[in-house]
Each structure stands twice: as C-alpha cells, then as structure tokens.
Amino acid sequence: MPTYTAPTRDTRFIVNEMLDLASYGDLPGFENATADMIDTVINEAGKFCAEVLHPLNQVGDREGCTRHADGSVTTPTGFKEAFAQYRESGWGTISQPETFGGQGMPHVLGFVVEEFMATSNQAFAMYPGLTTGAISAITAKGSDEQKEMYLPKMISGEWTGTMNLTEPHCGTDLGMIRTKAEPQADGSYAITGTKIFISAGEHDMSENIIHLVLAKTPGAPDSSKGISLFIVPKFLPDADGNPGKRNGVMCGSIEEKMGIHGNSTCLMNYDGATGWMVGEENKGLAAMFIMMNAARLGVGIQGLAQAEISYQNAVTYALDRRQGRALTGPAEPQAQADPIFVHPDVRRMLMDAKAFTEGMRALALWGALQVDLTHKALTEEEREQADMILSLLTPVIKGYGTDKGYDVANNMQQVYGGHGYVAEWGMEQFVRDSRIAMIYEGTNGVQAMDLCGRKLAQKGGAAIQAFFKTVDDEIASAKEDETLKPIAEALDKALTDQKAATMWFMQHAMQNPNDLGAGAHHYMHIMGIVTLGLMWLRMAKVAAAKLAQGTDDAAFYEAKLTTARYYADRFIPDAGALRRKIESGAASMMALEADDFATAA
Image 1 (tube, one colour):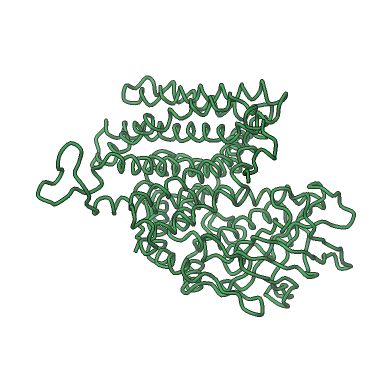
Image 2 (cartoon, rainbow, N blue to C red):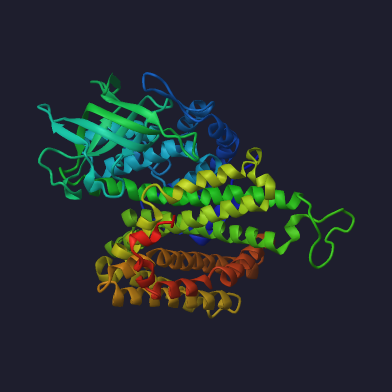
C-alpha cells in the first residue's frame, strides 16, 4: 500500500525563502498572505490531501466511475464525501477573486494546494481542477450577468465546470469541429453535437455542472476563426439561480482508459441543449485558450505530482529492501544483505527524481508568481515582463514537466524491481496515471511547437531575450560566489546551447519549416533543463546564505546544495547533445516515403 506525506518543508522553503512571497506584500491580494497564513495553508492542505484524498487513490483506480441507464454517473466510493469536505473547507476559494466569494490570495498558494491534491489523488483533483479553468474563462470573457450567475457557486464548489473541445474526428485542429449553435429568439443558442474525452463531464459530486462548449454558429467561417464559446449548464438555472430544468446534454459513455480511472472521462451528447455565448461570436478559441493555459499549468503540476509520490515510495522501499552488498564493501555487515539504497544505479534513479521534483516544484511556483504579477504588479512594464515570461514557461511546464514526470514515475517503478509490476504496491498506477499528462491539454509535441513556432517569435523575440537576460544576470552574480560558481558555469554552458539553438532556428526555419518541427521537442527540453537549472541556482544561493549565517536545519540546506551540484553534473550536460540533434535538421527524419515504413511481408 503506497503512502503520501505532503512535502510541506520543501514547499515552505520555495515560497518563503526562494520566492520570498512576503516581499510582495504591497501588491493586491498579497497582503492576505501573511507568514502565518502561508504556513497554515501549506500545512493544512498537506494534511487534508494526505489524510482524506490519498486513501481514496487506489479505491478510485480499482472501482472507476459507473454510468447508469439514465446517463448519470456515480463516482468511486468516498469521492462524494471527500468532495464535500473539500468544498466545506474552502480549498477551491484560495486564489479566487473576493468579489465572487474567493479568498483573493496569490496564485502561488493555489498552486501549492493543486500540487498536493494531484499528488495524493490525481483523478479526484481533476474535478475541481477543470472547474478552476472554467472560472478563469468566465472571469475573463463572461458578461456581468454570467459572472454573477455562475462564478459564486463555481468558486464555492457547489457547481463544477468542464471544457468541451475535442470531437471524434478532431482534436488539435479545432477548426474542424461540427458542433452547431443555432440562435434562439430569447438570445440563447441550441447546441447540438458530440464531444469526447470530457474530463469530469458527468458525476454525482456537485449540484450542477457548467459545461464550456466550443461550437459554430450558422454561416461561421469553416476554420478556427469561426468558433464560438458557450456556457451550457447540466441544469438550467431557475429564477432564483438554483438548478432547475434538466438541459439537453447527457453522458453517452465513459471512456475505458489506461489510468485516472477515478475521473469520469465522458463522451457528451448535446441535443439542442440551451447555451449562452461567452464573449464575442467567432472569438471562442481565444476565450477557451484562457482556460487551456490555466489547464496546461495544472497538467504540468500533475507531472510533478506523479513524480513526487512515486519518488517518496521508492525511497521508502530502497531503504527497506535488502539485496546484495555495496560495491565498496558491506554497508551493514551484521545483516545478510545491504539495503538497495547503497547501490549507485538505485541512487542514480533516486537522485534524478529528487533533482527533478524539487526543481520542478520551484519552477511551477515561480510560474504561479508570474500569473500573479501579470495581473497585480505595480507597473505596466512589470506586468508585461511577467506575461512574457509566463507565456514562455507555460509549454515548458506542461511539456517538459510531464515528459520528465513520466520518466521519474517509470524509474521509481524500476527501483521496486518485480514488486513494482504488482498492483498492490501502487507503483504501476503512478506510471499509468502519469502517462495521460503528456497527451491531454495539447500533446507535448503541440507544446513544443507552441514554444518554438509561436513563443520564440513573440513580440519580435522580446520574450525569449527577456528570459535570456534573467538567466544571464543570475549566472553573472552567482559566479562571484565560490560555492555557487561551478553550478553557474554549468548553467552558462547550457544557456549558450539554448541561445545557439535559437539562432539556428532563426537561420533555418524560414527556409525549411520542417527544421523547426524536427527540433522543437529537443528545444523544449533544452529550455526545461535551463529553467530548472535557474531554479537550482536560486535555491543553492538561498541555501548557501542560510548555512553561512547559521541555522538549526543545516542538513536540509546541505542537501539542497548537494542536489544542485548533482543537477549541474547530471542534467545540464544533456543540453549540448540536444543542441546537436537540433542542428542535424530534418533531412534524414523526413527523407523516407510513406511506403518505406511498411513492414515487408
């Protein structure tokens, strides 16, 4: 039976020391995040997730969700009661606007709760996670009437939300959608069509489900420029704003999936369902991207989450399981064998996991801070800078974070040997659950092309240049400190590789777009290596200063410095190999004809 303990000590280190959240106290909403409040949120969220949500993780995996003849869906045993506790405790309100019942605290703390929930029970966390994305879209694009009608109950958790994009014949290419929206005399629309892969599409945990649906109005352009966004409630709100008449939307089936069985991933049928347009006609994709970007950051956190829980359990197992002797001689001569923890190959996997999870947590929370600064920084220049950095970070957090998160979950299963392949230990569930994160909310290939095809050129390259300057400045400062200098020098080499890869794209992508496509995945990973390297440089700086001034927790800070050095030794050199892959171009990749891929009879 796997266990989970929320990483509250590491989270407090990142929030209080690396990010220094208290230094932003002059910004709106940050005044509520006092030191005591930050500690309370982190500790109590950790306790709730470990004690309430985690025990249901294997239950949800074994039972899955059940669809009934009337289209209703029952969630696994305990989910409904746990969601009631989640709602009553106000965990979904942490970073939501006070105007509609939220607590108005920084997104950083909202991301902390999101990580702990996804780590303890990813399938459960997806129900409120999709709601958060729907709230973002309605907040940004909804009318005042729509905000008043839906946001208070969605923020409180009384109602939940979904996003409906994909159809059986189209996923990434949303311009091909066929769902229709026919205007009605009362200003509403009749929505007809089928959507698939709808996470939390139907369940028994909330009073109402608010679907955000992409559809096309009559005469709309037959492309992505002809998409509109609609609010389509499961139950139509009555005159008092309470769930009333059942709408024409129903779950047709639940997908049979590799993992996240506790979440109801539904095929949704819309049969003349009543909906209301959100924002402008034919501008729905831009509105939905607000929700998708929020979801992509959340999926990146899922990559971290499955890495974290698999790592925690692998460490416990490696300290307990005895096989063989240490290469340097028996570590525990009195025992028949040494713990596998002493073997370098096991240490390699555990150190890779530790370096990734702690670095990725720092990156996710730094990304959350950019979300806050985009809206709340004091000057327009600061807000624009944060927005540029966030736009670059989003595909990296999602793409690199979930690629590496899956790798970690896979390696932590390997630590268990044959026991890792057996369901009762829980490791194979973490591998299965982590796999979806590389696929949904835009596959990681799509994330890589978003980064390289759109974000690098954003504002004439201003965003990537701003990122380069941020890293350059921190490297230059760190080189003056003998403790930090080796880490800074290693990161400098990786940044040089990223700059060179960026220049190579500029020189070749216009002539041959396939050169960009062939190298995009590798570039996303170079940037992932550099961004985590920046996080480790920052964490090492804080740890070194703390040790220099004296601390009662020296072991924690020494471990930070050691892990930062390990990251510099073992992760950063990969940037050079990735750069060389990019510079090899697309010629050999695209040379074969389709028939050449067929297996000879």
